[in-house]
Length: 354
Ligand code: NAD
Image (cartoon, rainbow, N blue to C red; front, side):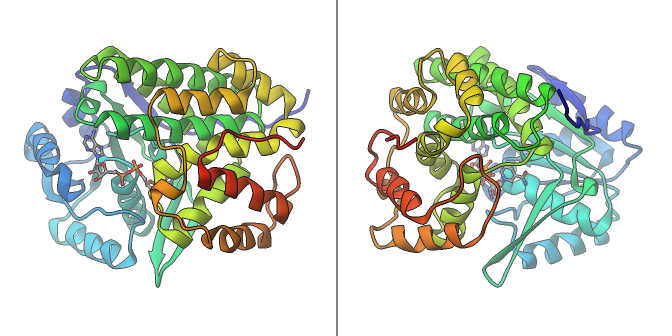
């Protein structure tokens, strides 16, 4: 056996009611003037957090939107400077945490993240900033949140469909972590348990949307998924979703949900051990088929068509994805990618050619 394992330095508070520790955690970072970040839709929650912070809240900036536009980063940077902020508190999903990361990259301010989706950005040192329609991404430890508060109570407001797609987005991180080139025994343990917890949690959320226990089970899985996303490299699935999101502006979590069974089918023959672990976690015999069955049981979107893709887009996306070589357990072949995208476009069950 041979591997490299690199732990990431972050402090995690997990549990119902843990939001109440926000002020103490800001103080523990040595900060006294926190700027609270959120999307316009989550202003009430951000205000609640600012009230909890009391005198250590410097103000609230509610401009977070998808894809972290560079103009927003400039605006946020001047707000933080004018308020004399010495810490960023990001309350929300990947878009809000993404804004905090972009501000931290320039300023070095520490981040306390309070996630409200299952996307997992809070556990990674990966950032992205969009300028002139191009998303520049990079990795820098300065953007990794120092502290993360996971409070399942904050997830009760997430509509069931959003919880399902966000949860399958998280599952995709764990699935690809299992066949990552740089996978290690710890990341694989985490990834398998992530899939198990997410599958159980999401199923219970659909059955009982008001149940906090299920929200917490899925959140535990999402934490593990975010951790492995930050620890090992991703492959075909993430590349395809990035291309679909960037080129066609398809919705993030929904796109991950539709593509995952097909990406797994593409890689099945070249990653048998990973597939076994995914299937074991899903409680089924075959990982891609089980993943498709789970999505359909959860009434998740199954086709890229219903997300707004058109048939001529298939060729364009296949061209872009095949043009940029990247590591994947199975080499990228354009004709096979096109077939995969066609199945995902139509919402067919995954097909195998391995
Ligand atoms: P998001 O942050 O855009 O949130 C989607 C919507 O849901 C927003 O309108 C938000 O206000 C609302 N919302 C969030 N939590 C809610 C809650 N609990 N209740 C009610 N409404 C709520 O979506 P996302 O899927 O979390 O994040 C997607 C973005 O994150 C993408 O741009 C993606 O690239 C990025 N991301 C980055 C990383 C990374 O490591 N850098 C990892 C994962 C995702």
